[in-house]
Image 1 (cartoon, one colour):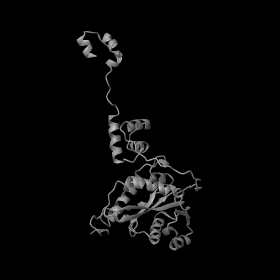
Image 2 (tube, one colour; image 1 turned 180 degrees about the horizontal axis):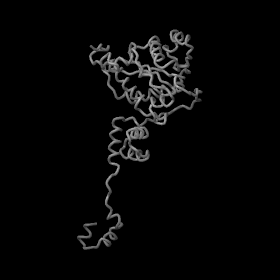
Image 3 (tube, rainbow, N blue to C red; image 1 turned 90 degrees about the horizontal axis):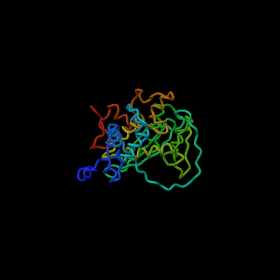
Image 4 (cartoon, rainbow, N blue to C red; image 1 turned 60 degrees about the vertical axis):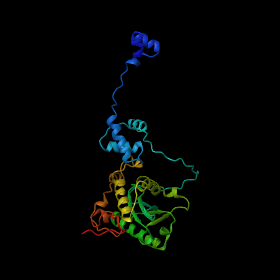
Length: 300
């Protein structure tokens, strides 16, 4: 446009008409990006939490004092290419099993195992216990072997801290169907709910939790020792309960939702940590993960 005006001594009007563009388009000056600060903060947050979608990132921004519309966050999220890629899977259409309608905490706990590995190839099993109503992760117990005796000790510790559940839901693994487990539930009249074989969706709360645990913690961590696993999953459990917005709880954290239901923070009570409890690391009785040995080192 400027070349045509100077070389052929044409007015702006005639040059625009000759080239075929509108004069307003030629005179347009781009405006500065008013979302530059928000865009930078969103990109930084998405890099810290690469598995968070735009709605969860919006909830985190609001918790940090950012009053911003979710549609603006989605637009910036899309422009920066931050979308979480998900593999589409073929699913069979099956009749859904009936699930109880939960009304309060401690009405049903759900538990299951998830497996991961150390850097040396040794396998590690992690027992997860979740409150199906508040979505709180009650325990993440990690070890190379977890039998039914260890499972009952973990449940006894949780009952001491939180009170007794009405029922515990699990699959049909030998740790959950053993005589020890059945005997443990007999005296306090705790109902053991075992799902149908091959139907993990009937224990959907803990299966969904395992997806988040695998995606946001295990897949992004590299473990050298068993202590490292215990320390890492315990820190992530605290973040999951106290900081991570949960979509099924109107983007409240599980701890906030439990408090809104009149259920206080039971983990704030003073107590002596049990054997293999994550509190070994949190209360200062034991050091943080020791990279050179499998067992915790007693401090002092």
